[in-house]
Image (cartoon, rainbow, N blue to C red):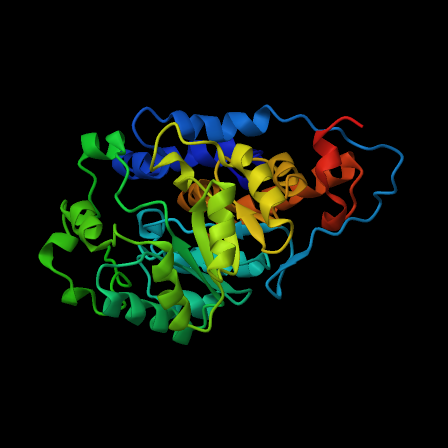
Length: 362
């Protein structure tokens, strides 16, 4: 199959499924328990109708936007996803190169297979670092400092995983990392040999879960803010009152996310949660959204409801597994074309002109 045959994201996913092992594919694709939220993330987008405008000059379109002073060529960011080494020998480095080529930001997962420093050197359009808050504050601080020294431009703290969700596909497959893949950034150390043996075998999930602070509260975020100069996003918010608490505690941005349906099953779809959060914050903080974004029209809908950009996770993994760096580039450019077309057909030639009227009859 040539790139000309990869017409949409489903084509990339189909090719990825042929190249990945069953365990790796299921790890990327699966959700928690009955996967209700995984499905509803997607269905909720499909249930939204676009009320497009006509007789608007759309001969020129501008997809660019800015988040906390960082320019993006389109309102799309690479989401943090684990274990890119399952898909490509260069793992997150390949993803970073593709994101840089697309002139957008990559968010590097704590559970990456490549060193923060290596990825940051390739992420020339900007790198954000996704962080878990550990019980060991020294380990948390070491990881933050390492990300900051590597050149990360923001931290994205995941807050919806005090315990890991039950992904039954992984349980059935007894998922584990292949021996050649390591968690080189897990504790802020670049030497993976410093990790205990159980971090390298089928006990990985339980070992990682044992590290995570499950007594984390809002007051702990003040400490996190105090140890870094980087902007701090909180990822995993689905309630307006939590968004307001984030603002009260000095957070710099919100990611509306339910962890791609991988944590609490039957939790609210993110696009459904977005309007109340956007109304509560009223433009005072940047809001991003992930979960179920598969088409350019989804991006337009998220922006219409108050997001300034979206993050995509699984689509990037399908591109990486299918064609490596070129596959990620292909997926990002596919989204760019679809966003551009959706904006043109909606009568909104710039991102700034996308508003809630596109989703309500007037």
